[in-house]
Length: 65
Image (cartoon, rainbow, N blue to C red; front, side, top):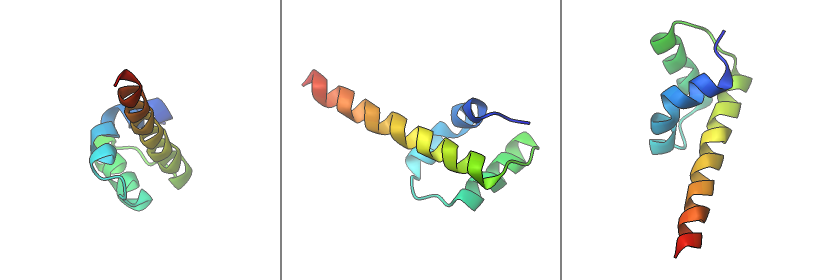
């Protein structure tokens, strides 16, 4: 079993570069790279966490200006 943080660490760059990537595609990539099956809910949460991180980074950059 892979937890959410591990998925985010390994696929943060990929999901960040392709924010409209389908959940099924994330699920397939996790299965092929990590050799574990994850459900759609876990993929959805990982995608949301990456998007929230990226949005937070933009807010922090604007605050520095």
